Image (cartoon, rainbow, N blue to C red):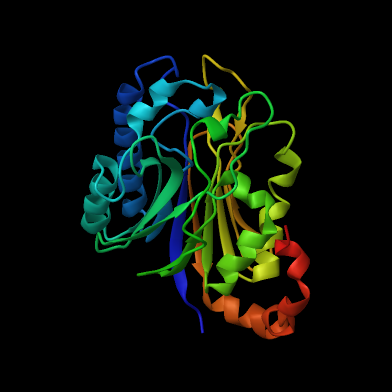
Length: 289
């Protein structure tokens, strides 16, 4: 039986040069995204995900403690509270990736999931933290996630989150499927070059292997003063068969919208019995030291 929901991704560029005051940038980016979320509501969107660290530039291009100033508590921080109010006002499920503080000097790359009635449902903390290649110094800013791979029961279905570099690790993608996810959102910040050829390969593969929908988000443009490369956009939705449903451009801000028929999940799982035929007792090497 069809279960169709209208889902969206926000692909955007930074409003300011990264040399500006981080708090000024945060305020401008929050305002910008509220307008884009409101635009999505007018188009009937029921669930939306913002890009990784949406309220700033990708500041991990440098190692500077000034960016600690825009960390926020979850759910009590101002951005999460504003998004809870916005979700309730618009009747929309919102996935909100921000820079979280959880005690003095304890920071995470986190995404909150807020239901359509404004209820804060919980959060996912990015597990896999890169510290590689010039311009991706994330271990300076984030601890590895410690909350597992939660799946949230929302007004539109069961939602899970994986963040950027996580996408290179199939183990967590499988855990999300085992936990009942129907839609996985992967907010990212990734530049052209080394990993671009994987962008439309890995996550459709996760969708096929785990038989759920995936929404992958990437920002666009070049960000000064670092200029580590071009964020190449191409945000997309794919279905449990790995088929692309909507794909954004590589260089323009866009609201990517797709109708997702969650009923397709049962159809695909009844055809390919991957969960029935798993052999977890034989997979010990995956978690061995």
